Length: 214
Image (cartoon, rainbow, N blue to C red; front, top):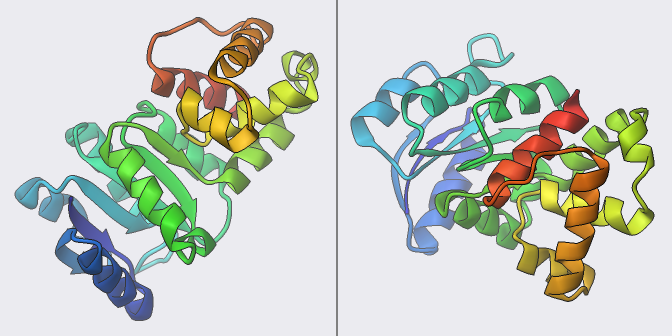
């Protein structure tokens, strides 16, 4: 795939450039700040943009704001944001337009190369890739809500993996369940959470994350 990187840590940025090149991907440009990220994305039209949330000059949310703008202007472009810590409000802002071609990973996850590359593949394919720790914290935050209290432990496990962006088949592999069992658990989860059924799994992920964030 063709990518643009925006990361102010020179060591991490150059490491990602080398890793992606070794995997056969093309890094169109690697930026040290977010000031020109939107313009470069519009000009070069990459498949996926990878951006740190906190970047110069203020190291607050420059990367996130650029990522949200890219999602609004170029919905066909995948966006993966990297963060040092879980920021619930940031995850909500990123996911607000929808859960297609979007990812939110903690930087520690990047060191797990296979997981990082898998996240890029899922985003490039039109899906989502949400860090498990982000999902866990959202679940804990939403645990006070009555509908979540209705879920069985197994249903909660299925919900957490679903919210990370995995397909039904992948959920089954990770939890050692048959596809029919996954579908049964998901139907029960969505019934208990009173969520409207949809055909696309990405739309269901968004519904779950929005519910948990609320």
